[in-house]
Length: 364
Image (cartoon, rainbow, N blue to C red; front, side, top):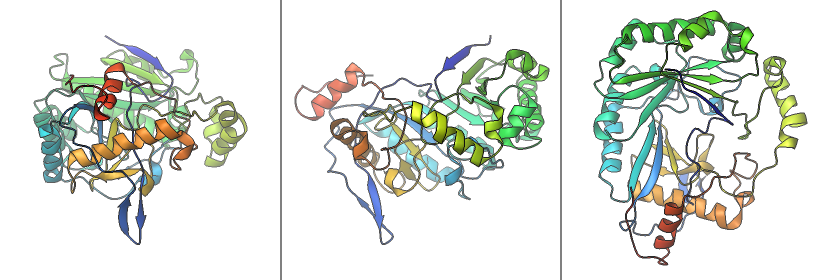
């Protein structure tokens, strides 16, 4: 069955939230600007994880919102295991969902299948998905992934619906490689879907259905989920690409954004979903406040060297500052057009309990 979800951007998560304060680096040493973390044993804070297997990527996509943080780091299985043990044994938080990808192409890490198995073994009840550009889905790698005996969802990313649009963003020849990888994945998984679900994550480039590639449509008909979203543009703007010519160069994209898109999308004043409810961990453990965060200002700690409660506490405090003082009070977020996220009633109650205004109560 194919499920098509039309969304306003890459946020296919509940719009919930919490608070915190940024940190900075002075003379090579990180200095936190956060107030001390309260004892969180009286509440369970919901967290969505982005765990980056690698900062390396084999493509250079025009619309990539993490490319300025690409590098050469790979996540080590032992390091991941120690981090996940902290999270799994913490009484202060509950992991509500996991993305086993972030800035890089996850299959660039040769130990990805092991990372997948560790994540699933230690956090078996948290829904897990990971996204790939599909170019490295060789028979060997696919068999390694399918051999991991735990449930998860694989999304293969497609831009537009044909070779011209996809390659314009991702590079010449990438569309055919991605189609080949997706077909390999579907063929080797077979009709008995078992524990692995396969989806297509399509960036909508405003093309009519009649221009879609026939092979793309054939493969989409075979996947379990089809998610179709408008691009997440630099600066957090969710907006359609009006013309494919806008992707001809970085200059053309910048011109379209500065002249047409950004002026029509004012910066919200409140906090977005991400701040305070997401932890995005790089391969060295450095943990950022959201997926489009770059540099030290967005780092709220290190999950390899600090306790999970300490890092989450800073993230919660980050959102609290944004909620109380406004988005423009935080340099990192002052120009971000990510939409405001509502705080679910049970999360609001949790914040009140943290302030001593309500008795403690655990929630799922």
